[in-house]
Length: 478
Image (cartoon, rainbow, N blue to C red; front, side, top):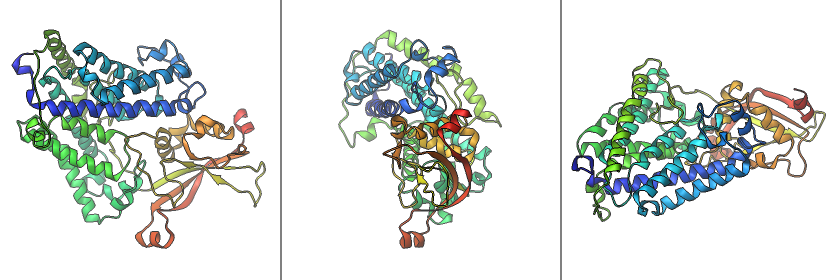
């Protein structure tokens, strides 16, 4: 590779990016393997065969358009896990350059095939972000070639869109971002709180305003520093990393924060890492075809950036959008609006076919979303509990759950083993319930005095019915 196109001073940064992305692909494939049967399998809540029958390959490229079975899906997910695992432990970077690129292409293509048939379960911005980062990883090279300077710049362009897009969507969205009060509510009302979220929520309100102001600086000012000479670019990346670690501690956002951290590590030069580890950068000449491929990727990215840039400039900015079916060069953003109160859909079953004053309703407990008020929220990110996240949207509006919630209830009434694996607790282990109902509760964090007195992390009260009691026969007739 010609001298202008090489970046010898980013050996450790490239290593951290490739290993970090491999770890996140491993998590993504593992989550797909463990959850797909209940969500999108042949007998799942939104079966893939039904989806591909109504869509063309052109609109949603996926190997599953040619053939689908649960066994094939599981096999491809296992292949993805293995490819990511080999890359994580350093095998892939030691392969010849074409083979290294083929492994990364394989991970991207397999995950693209999953995302493009995943429907609402895979409708989050971090899916597109992982795919876009995966495309760039194909062109980061192996251990024998210097990190391509142009690809490192493209990674910074991704980081810019992630941070600046999120900052703009906030300033254009909920007024509480402009008056610095959004964090009065967000730690309590976010989709899936973590073990420290209550601590963050109970911080003094002036500190919450400082948090919001700091977020605006990080997302609206700091991203421009990524394109300045060192050490300014590295310092900008370091600020982003620290901010993302704060978000990691305050909630569960799948791998959104972690992939942003991983990409930002590529901006920090070897001069910094050299104070911690030994940097050995002895590269062979880079093949001309690889240089041509990198330049072609850069030109393609520049051309595809038109719509994301136009989106950034638009007053009707889309929060997360893929402008092509390959999920490459996307628009990003998060939490343009903040909910002020937390509602949870609580699903309950009973063994009684006829309700009486003595009827006992037993609650289904989910793995991540709030339910039992005495259960402290758990840390799951970067692992993604897809059903739990969609239950948060369901509590906002029934419309978000219209396509899958009735089938979910049907599966519970059958005591479907695959569906129950998505839950933490099945209150009917011996025999399925006769009827299922769902109610909406208002949740808030327990105050310090309430927690000391009761041991509860939450305080809740019923608000409304989400679904009246239904039996299997009711759902069959509907």
